[in-house]
Length: 333
Image (cartoon, rainbow, N blue to C red; front, side, top):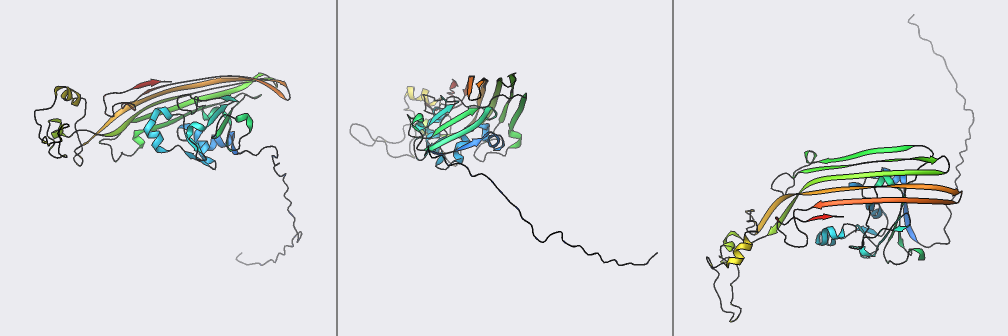
């Protein structure tokens, strides 16, 4: 006990040479097609983060594709709800959308009419340049979507995505913290109707969103509402162009006075012309569908698909008329 022993061990290598072979088949060049574009697979669709789970965000991952100009979006609001990107400088109305080979065009704005949930998509493809003649009728990008089909095994998914103002910071420009309650939920299920012969796939997605919108609008100052325009440029008569005087207190037309009642009073000390308000916007959406596939032969498949989508939006501000609160529009699609 307490003795130390030293044992010399020699390790000899089994071999002084090692060979690693890596082989792979090169992707075949499509010599019969000159179109440029890219395909997003089902796995990538499931793993890529999509704000609002909107498939159109997959399009801006491709070269030559950029989001729709903010000026167009703000200026037209809901009328461009289906326009999400521009391809190679073309206007968003120039794009074409296909779902399982069928045109998916909204005639109001030229964008897509139906937005399939991300969990229902098997493939997303966008052609940006020199599309084949089969996709004629447009000068922009060609977006094609293939929906998922069932398999010999029953598979399904359930999901819900939550956004809440409790998790958000305050908007610097809002007079108070904006309310936000958003729930986006859904599920899918697919399986066999007849083993190795027929399959089904169904899906549903719902969206419930209550969100405050802070909006500022230029309105008459308190003095101007009473007829005092002393802080403005001189008022001239239309006929003689002679100065009328800027203090018209007590001379406001009765009809004008009634219209002024619908305008909010300025409430920002740093800008006497600005009225800033925060009001609630409500959005409810439901969409779903079902698909059935029959394998007639190894090379022939007969498919039937049914899809539906409904949306109801209550906005506190009218995009087409008055820019002040108090005239909320409601729309359904």
